Length: 539
Image 1 (cartoon, one colour):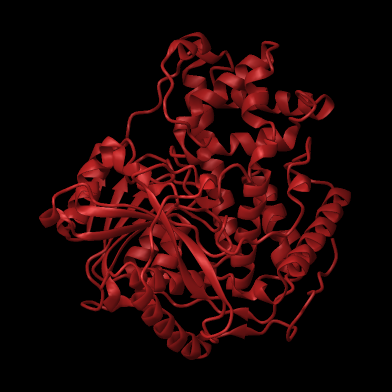
Image 2 (image 1 turned 120 degrees about the vertical axis):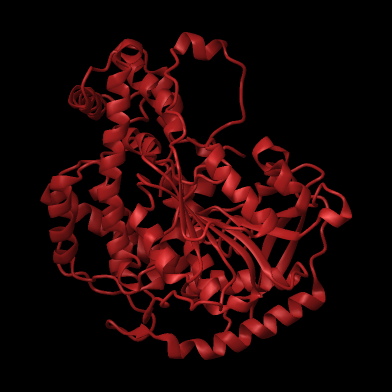
């Protein structure tokens, strides 16, 4: 979809009535919980096979860009858990062993950064970071690419070269003709997914991601799973906790998706668009506060006018021939995910208005070398969300809901709608009915939920809902902050709770709060150029 996965953590490492293009029974039918019995048997069978086979770890392929001591391997999972002896696919796995003495080791810590469509193959590299070193003494750090992602039976819906075509528009209040064009594009995209994936398309789901996690646990030789999921990773982690509660050792849910079945996924995206508006306001207020550095205005309203001025200029003359309003918007979405992006984006906007387009081009222009990865991530995102739940199939519903919302939240509403519109035309029927996530007291060990109060990608209400549904869970809130994905980040208070939980299993009784991490320091372009280079950040 974008430079960052929609329900994924930004990491510092590495129209009409829409007719369904059905390839199975048509209509609004859904698959309810009663259909999960065969899959439960298939999961147990696959996990038993994986436990017997284990994972053979060796040097990582060059394409992974992971050097020793990180090792790589694969684990086989059924494409279809209702047919566990049918087609098998391989998931790529990475691992670095615990650095502590033998008596310190507690097992494997498996991490997923979200998406859908994001990989955590890089995660073992985090063992070298200061925020993770004590945890890395006790745990093997395990990353993996979920089904469909990268080399794990990769999914594709269109030619990657088409995916990065630029410049593009991104109107906040689109015309009727523009809407009609986007509906046609969504229809073509859905057909492309069906054509390229064929019958396998229906098996890219959150429930299968949870089942794959159970097979991975068994393959690692872990009697019970220690797992940390961020963003979308919290959702299928919660599905895992519901399906396999006795196989859970410890679980961290960082920036929680709202698991209420009524919000998966159409309403969740509307909630997200509204929350993005608040975070966009946070960014503009910060820029205004630092007008001496950026000269973009002393009020959020003036900053907004300058942003719109740049949008208009790029619509008339794209920067470098590649950066139009669509690329500008995609780049500035990063400001809602992480305030680490604020100085960089504000600096680029400021420099553009001073006549220097190079910083903006560097940050916003499509990168052909990442086209394949971005197209793949978007394909997996789309397949999982479209398969997971019923979606409205009448364009009037989408047009009404998003037109009303765009009056209050113009920044992200329509871009979000276009991203998800293929789900209205999805060729796989029937859709699944989302699992009702919940566990009773004493069924699940204590779990830990981390949330930033002003998170846009996963609004805070989702953390409250997950906390309510997982009996015995503890919720740690970073107050008045909005970075998406806070575990192992810059907040020492949050990290202390995370570390204590993973090392000892202790949690607060119910809830605890942390003060917000410091706002980013505005740094002039001249001073920033003179600073030493840091690890690259995906913003």
